[in-house]
Image 1 (cartoon, rainbow, N blue to C red):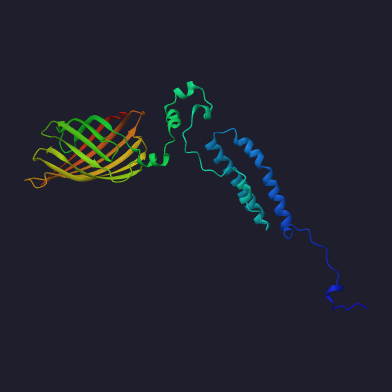
Image 2 (image 1 turned 120 degrees about the horizontal axis):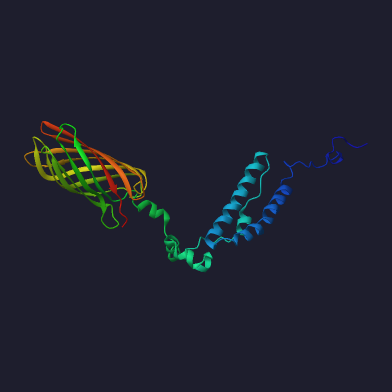
Amino acid sequence: MPNPTHRSSLPVPPPVSSPFTVKGTHRTRESGRISESVPLFQSLNSLFPRGVADCSLKCSIGLIYLALHLTLNWGGIPVASARPLLAQVDDSPLDSEPLNSQSVDLSPEIIEGSPVLQRWLQEVPNVLEEIRNDPSFRTRVRVGYAQVTSSDDGSGVNVGVEDLFIGGTGLTVSGDYFAGSGGFSGGGAQLRYYVLPLGGYFNLAPVVGYRHVEGESYSTSGVELGGRAMLVLSRTGGADLSLGYSVVGIGGDQTVGLGTFAVGYAITPEFRLSTDIRRHDADGDNDTRFGIGLEWMPRF
């Protein structure tokens, strides 16, 4: 009679064909399915330029692997590592060599009609670097009408140039002139240096210049020192806000504080409307000037 305590005499249960226990079989099956899809992606790969195709193929396989990984692991089934699969794809980095008309397979007429494409064919640009350093605001040439709110006679014409860039730096030149009635007039020139990347949506600039300010009971000229903040709501002149404050006549007999708030909104790719409020704080005399104008944004 067999000993019931002897392990070898006990019947061995058949293996359970559960997906939670047969990991090796499932791993092999899924790896085979993924590997079979490689030729399909490689055939699609040939339809794109080399640099784009390498990226699209790797991204496609990566997305498929991620979907399988999340789906199967949710049910408790680990999926095979995708390293052997990705090794079948060309692992070279994106081409740094410039493209040519043969590689993009475009007619000469299309290439000649696209300055952007011509530039990319000559040299692939550093797009991220250009976004950071390409100015998010543009040079503006303004002409408009202004009214001093404290006087019915203090109205006139306001002209100016804003942010004329010097080279590829953050240094700009600005100037304006107001010719008004009732004893109100003034004008000056400024140098502004934007300290943050020009492609950002916010920037700060110290201001230094020379200005003449004249009101009903004050008149001063001299060095202008201050600062300016700009918030870009839409790039390349679409919309922006600016806030500035400066002091004119430092070290002289009379100083005048000048605060400015301006808003601009483009109505066409080359023109936009602008409004500004200027506050003059003289010794015992304050004036507020409201202006509206049309700005032209030239392309250099």
